[in-house]
Length: 83
Image 1: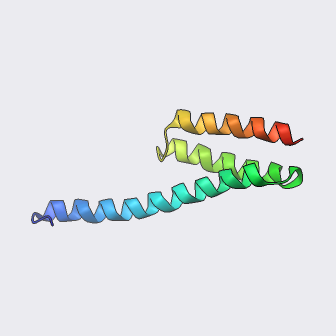
Image 2 (image 1 turned 90 degrees about the vertical axis):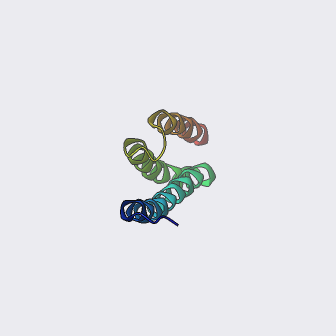
């Protein structure tokens, strides 16, 4: 356990950020899975939601921006295959 006050604060910040990031990452993964498992009719709206979350995650550096772009590209390809 940290003894210095600033180290204690950093630990508190780290814990709170970790919980927020974990929730966001989980939400993102769920959205991506929904696109992959959706039927052709549902896939369009699921794709729009996933793209929105991927863009935000890349912007906020939750995941690397290139990783977000790569996932969007692969989802678009999968969506085109369902049509």
